[in-house]
Figure 1 (cartoon, rainbow, N blue to C red):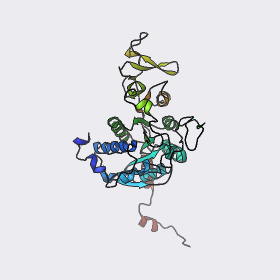
Figure 2 (figure 1 turned 45 degrees about the vertical axis):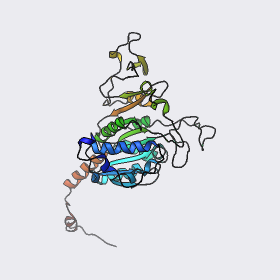
Figure 3 (figure 1 turned 120 degrees about the vertical axis):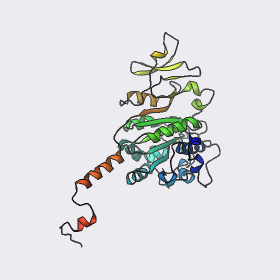
Length: 338
């Protein structure tokens, strides 16, 4: 971990005063990112942090790395350009549920589809915080806000479903205040080649306080969440005696020891399976019918856009008779300049 590396997590802290509200989940995420980068042995000069607009998008100011605070919803487009222009940079995009999934939705899904080697952290607090409490694309149906005083009648996006549906190859989920698990998820995202989406269930203490409390409260979290690990049975619960099975085409929560069910009957998580069917089901699980899935839900290898572009350019250049500007001006072609 970070303490065993030459790089310390404090090396990634800028000299700027952090201006998020006291108690905001963004503080914990910032800490997790800095610890993950130190653990990965990053050099500050090889990291670029790109953001759009929103509370979370102040992130680049607090990182002692390269950074770019861009415009609303366009973080994915800018981050894509940065990575393709300089593939050696480790590019991290910081975004929120409003920034990424509303005005930025088109850029978001096409970044995922192209599989550009970006690490995207999606802060999901189910509200617009910076613009003072409007409902967002992930707000629950019936949610009362300044823009839905009688309750929103819209069905919310599920970020995992949206990511996998856009042909995403990496999706993970964690909770803001679970720093240890968050660091591991960010490390896994960084190691993945291609677009990695990490949804962080984050709390806005001002406009949507305790929105995730039903599953994040310590008294109940063990029974209401499941931390998935590749190659391990899908077991959860305070007594570690609950699990997931398939009943027909549906997931079913069962108790080990009841009705003859043993641990051998429990599904084993395969994050590397190319087929999206079970990954979608896991990503879509919601309390109270199911435990909410945390951990790496999907991690599959696929062609990476920026690597393919670099390879294609090298092949074209190799086949071209023009290797330099001097070759161009002495090639015998006649150039008319108007």
